[in-house]
Image (cartoon, rainbow, N blue to C red; front, side):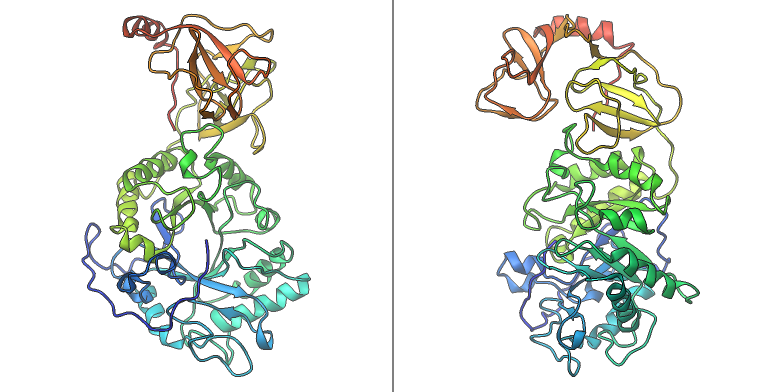
Length: 488
């Protein structure tokens, strides 16, 4: 995510044509559901990459007119201790310290004109939180004591406390989001703990959320996520090698690792969200078209119990991109907002000491795992390990294993129909397959210009293969009763 400072002029609100999920509901937000949509607001991301002012970020109430969005993190507090030791709030073209008045002796923008917008959105059942950090912001604490003091400031200025420097006036936000992408990693556990002490006994529900990178563990929030309870975690599956663009790569999309983390975290009921760019210009990589994203969300929802919905960056991009948020909401609603049924453990049980080829699948500790490359190691949620969890599962493991022998022997009778010939100029990820010299080969890890069968050892020989449709059909017929294929 990123923060940008826009112009001071508020743009005239365009007429919104409501499609798909019609009507305004006042149903209170339910964090236990599987179909929630979180969309960040405040940075005019569209305006940072486009010059057509008419489509720049609008005020909050513009994005609350239907049921598509459930949670809006207001972004960002991009400096914790500014002038007068007060936080710095930057909402780009809507409100910022440069173009708007600030409270005396501070650099904290007075954005009290947004109070009615916040309250309007909340009256429609949405929750609005305050997001801290953002891309490009270097924030952090020198000590736990400083973190606790800052928690008191946030409580008094934005949440249920009181002070003379409340940027949103009488409006009371619903919690705090940590989008920490720079600075230090210390003090955040003390910060969250202090906030939760304020939440205890409050007259309303408050939430703590975080937005780590998909790379696990997150460099800035990893220790905090393991130390204190979060209600939801909005994992950024973009701008990273584990992003949505790597969904079909066994060494890429790693939602399963986050699902395993959730079960053993301080809050086993924490919800994990798939973070996605809301358009092709919203991030440097990871954007998927609405249909592709809908498939990813449906599959992930049906495979992992911690799934909570989708997070998007950001509102300005989503609305201009044909209501990208609404398309995702409709897909999630169709997949079902409540209830989870564990998929069957359809892969064979992991067998210690067995050598597995890349793309082999096994059942182990309540998950189906896929091998990133050739492996004899036990599956585990190690980001640098040999296995990726691709689904939670229940029941007894079934079916035979797909393995090589420990001595390196290769199976025979394989089909390579439809598998592309190896090319020296192509970069292959672990698990990729090629046809070379009449054999099917699988890459153990990333490779380029390393010939299958060479001394590099990067390619596993899956045996001689046939490529005609007739021969492939015969092979498939023999295997179909016992093989299990899992596309993710």
